[in-house]
Length: 139
Length: 139
DNA sequence: TACTTAATGAAAATGTTTTTCAATAACGAA
DNA sequence: TTCGTTATTGAAAAACATTTTCATTAAGTA
Image 1 (tube, each protein chain N blue to C red):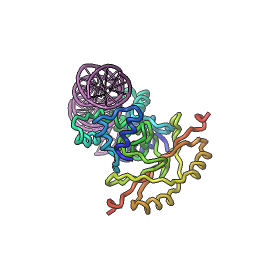
Image 2 (cartoon, rainbow over the protein chains, first blue to last red):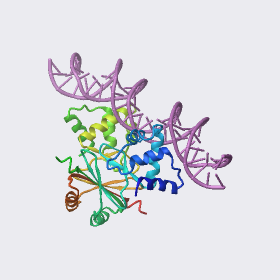
Image 3 (cartoon, rainbow over the protein chains, first blue to last red):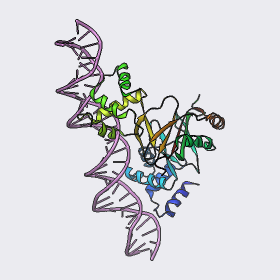
């Protein structure tokens, strides 16, 4: 996996590889902190001056559609994006610096079965997110 | 607990009880589906015609501050509010009709301890949310 | 190299949330 | 009850965020 590979995936899905998209992909690829569309615009414009904010929105939309990036929900807002985890993963976020770590291995089967029985719901998905302080920020 | 009690809590915290606030509180109290500020405005205006959208935003802000309501995060958007659960509770949402059920009793200690050890993070909170179909909507 | 058409940036439109401000009304004090 | 202080209000404007429109540009294929 590399930024070049993301561009290939765009191409393979019938999307053209343009300078604007290269700049956005280069900005997003490998990020460990979520960025808002405006932040992506500011950063990517250093690589491609003419880049418009509208194109950032449109490119993020396509990267999300290809599941290369995903939206991050936080108390402060839910418009930021990071590279997507692979398979079923959850997030751990540092409240101080915003660093994002993926983890897997939650076993919520017992819980969901119990809740399903109690409520009559058919449970199809779950969101689990942890918040804390990363090794650097816990001082 | 009743809508009247929410108004008392506003009063006890130094806020005045007005017609506009009554209408918003009456709308929010007892809801089992999340409403956006605009939806609250539309509904509450049936009880208090002159109600402005701005006042809805301001009242929701205060109810959230008093922890009487809380924001609900969903794939489609994160601007909707419902009456808050008591203590540490999680949400189960029906994907079809939007009905919200609270539950407790998750035990994530083993998981968070393991993740904390693996990542070096100090874990302070977690969000857990289940999505599915309620008894009515699963047909 | 030329052609087709997806992609672009700018501007405008739309939608949401916040701020400003003069008028109003809640509510404690008299 | 009445009065006075001041929090609250709605309207309008401002500030932001996101989407749409459209003429121009450039990617990728023939």
